[in-house]
Structures are given as C-alpha cells and as structure tokens.
Amino acid sequence: MSRTFKSAIGKMLRSGLKWKERIIIGLCIIVVLFTLLLVVDIQMDFGISGNQLVASHGRVKYVVDEGPESVYNRFRNRLLQKTHSAAMTGANFSKETLPNDISVLNGRIKDIATASNDAFLPDDKQKDGRKLPVQHRHDDFSDIVDYIMLDEYDRQNFRNEIDRIHAVVSKQKNKSTKKRRTIGEMKRLYIEKNSTTLEKFHAQISEDELYSEDSPYVDKLLREMASETITHVALTESRFQTFLRDIFDAQKTGGTQLKLVIDFANNMQALFKPMRFPREQQTLPNHFYFTDYERHNAEIAAFHLDRLLGFHRAMPVTGRLVNMTSELYQKCEGDLLNTFFVSPSDNLCFHGKCSYYCDTSHAICGNPDMLEGSFAAFLPSPKLAPTRVWRHPWRRSYHKRRKAQWETDPNYCQLVREIPPYDKGRRLFDLMDMSIFDFLMGNMDRHHYETFKMFGNETFTLHLDHGRGFGKPYYDDLTILAPLLQCCLIRQSTLETLIRFHNGPIKLSAAMRISMSSDPISPILWEPHLEALDRRVELILKGIRDCLQKGENPVSEHET
Image (cartoon, rainbow, N blue to C red; front, side):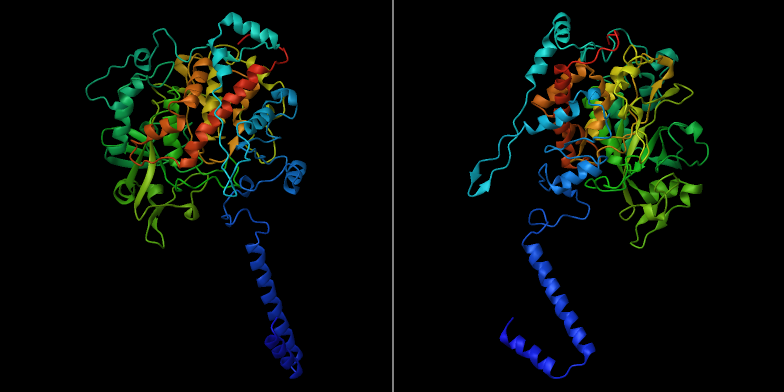
C-alpha cells in the first residue's frame, strides 16, 4: 500500500467520521481485497484444470488428472459407488451396475479397464520443455485371429485346458444357407406395378433379415422418404400399439417423446422424429437413461451402423429438412394443430402430446420455420406381419435406486441359457449382437425387443428405437456389454467384422462417414461420436480376448 493511500486513510480517520461511514468504508476495503484474492487465485490456477475455465455443462472428471489416492477418488470409492468411474481411455464401468460377486465376470470388467492403460506408450519424451502427446499403440489382436483359424477339435482342446464348458466364439450362422422364407411368399403377396416401394420392401423381408445386401429397395426407400410430398401429419401412439395408417384413423396421443406419423403423396408412411438439439449436445449429466432426450440423428446413424455391421435388422431411416409452415402446420389438425405457436424470437414452434417433454417449455422450434428430422420407414402392418414383444433378459430396472437381477446374480447368464428360446438356436447370439450394437452407440435404453410371429423363434431380433444413442461420446458404459461379458459368447461372423474394422484398411468411423455422407442433412454425427466407435470396437475385442483366456465354473453340460 503506497504512502499516499495510507495518508489519505489517516486523514479520513482523523477527520472524525461517523461510525456508519467507517463501517461502509471498511466493507468497501474488504470487497476490494476479496476481489483481488479471487483474481490472484484464478491466475495461479488454484483448483482449475489447465488455463481455461470449464463450461458449465462440461464433464470435469474426464479432464482432471486425478491419482488413485486423490481425495476425489477416495470419496467416490467410499460413498459414490453408483457413479461410473473413469478409466484413462474412457473405458468406464460402475461397480454397482454389475454383479458384486467377482466370480460373475471373473474380473473381466476390471481387467478390460486396466488393460486399456497398456495400449499407451510412456509419456516421458520432451520437446522444447513440453511433453509430447501420448501415442496409441495399435493392437491387431493377432491372438484372436489365430483362434478363429483353429478347427473345432483344436478349439475344444483349448477349452479343456482352461476349464471352459461353453464355446466363446461360435460358428452359428447369422443367415441361413437354405432358401429363406419371406413375408411375400408366406402371405402370397403379388407385387403389382402400382405397389409402393415400402410394400415391395415388406414383401422381401425374410426370416433372417429385413433386407439383403443387394436389395434394390433400401436406397430407393431412403430417397423417397427424403423427397416425397407430405400430405398429412398426425400424432402417434406407442410403437408397441400401432404402426400404420389404418390404426391412425384419428388423432391419438401417446409415447414417451414426440413422434409424428407422416403420410406421403405416394401412399407411403414414415415415422418423424424432430430435431431438438444440435449435434454437439451431449446427454445431460444429471439425466437418467430413461429420461434422456431422444435425438433424431441417432436414429439415422443407428441404421447406417446396423447396415455396416451386416445385421440388416433396422428399418431404413433418412434425414430431411422440412418447412414447418407448409409441411407440418398446414397438414395437421386437432390436438397437434393446437400446440403450434410463435415464440418470442418469431420462430414457429410446437410441442405435441406425449409423456415426456411435450409442453411449452420443451417446445420444438424451427429457424424460423425450417426444421430437421429423421424419417423412419414403418414395419409391415400388424394385420400383415404381427410382431411379438419380448422382455429383454438384461433389461435395466428403470428405477433410480433398484437394480435388475442381472446386476446382482452371479449365475444370471446360466439361468438365461436354460430358458427358451435362449436355450437353443440363434436367439441368444442375436442378443449378443444387439449388446455390441448398443454399446457402440452408447444406448442404455433396451427394455424390450421384437420378432415376427410368423417366423417362429428361429428368426432375427428387430433393432428398433435408437433415439437415446450417441449421447456420450467420451463415456464408454461397459454395463451395456453385460450380456457379452457375462455369457462370453459371440458369433464368429460378428467377431470377424469387428476385427476387420479395427485393423483396417477402413476403420468403422471412416465407413460411417462414407455411408452417412449421402444423407440430406449430413453430417449426421459429431466427430467425437465417430472417434468413440473405433475406441469401443477395441474395448469389445479386449473383452473377447479376456473371455478366451479365462475358464468358467461348470454349471451345465449344455454346449451352446
């Protein structure tokens, strides 16, 4: 403090200031000193990661480099067991969302997260006084490739050596080599000249897949949904109750989040999910998986991912930019029409009717009346090809505190193996494919699945409802892989596809960019989501490697 300032203070005190004035001056001095302290604290980086402030929605725990004995980690391990801990590579898992008995997964989750650290080289090189970025060491999983090359006799000998009853890698076929029955053949449908592309697509659905690799109707269906004139718009009920226009004779409400049924001029229909957030918007950290917002671009990306993996179990989905005034507002009526309004920013908005987020405070708005959305093709009418809804064995509790049985039962997979239709055939393998598919997307919302009734139990599982995927690009939830890691089971064809995308020459992220580049609202995914795909492929392969190296407690003589 300078002499001038001290003398000024002294004169003020000697001038006989009243006690109120002295208090005010004292408070002002305290505020100034406190402000200076804050400035010094920020500039000296007290408690802040790096030299930049973290945004209010940022996930600080993925940025701060905390040691295993830090105060935060000790607190998290002791009191926050329900919080997902972060591994160095983003391979995160929850200690309470998987069975507490370590024999359930035989240490697989912990091993995978620990092994992720081995994929990085030591960061001890310096350049101009700065550390070089950590370089990733590519693991080509040659040991898994060698295992795939073994014949059945050698595989059996290997299982005997490690005391394993069930096979990990199975040659169970994804698609039958025999002539496959189709809906058109079983229902004796005749394709006429005036039949819509969607009707032709429905007729060629087989018991193994929704469409073949060389189907001429998929790309044509995508083009038509992206360009055909919209003639009518209506609210939709839950997908489990209705699919096509004959059930939508009147305006109906329902569903957890807003979806609209779109009628086209060529007599086709599609399910419309409007855009709520930009591509960069991540899942809100305080949202449970069952209250997360649905994303229109997640539906589009899920279709392309399903197609690249060779599953062909997701209906075609495309993006489209619609004019809310001429294509929605002027084509709807009743309850939906009454929810349209103009916002204070002069943007046209609506909110529809549904269980979650259908009110004025969660309205969907255009810019000023242009709006992105996903258009998904409908499954066949329940009158033509009804579906059966199955409760997923690894369904989550959908409760803030309760756990599902698979999270606490050490022998849960063995129980599933003994229950039809999982005791034989393709169904359990399809659930393994589905868990891989969901893990790549980060989709935790898989409570039910569906199959076509006419094909019996020896048919594929449909991949539907992916709006809650692609929400956390920096977080890999290994609990989604619980079916795969608990059962240690995978199709060889699926495993070969993952290895091919991992080793290249084309990575899964690059293949997705190419596949989605033709979509009308491309780019579909934020770049971190594409990078997450490659990272998660590697995590899946590490899980399979761990399964191949570990034995199991023999409980049943049934060989899958």
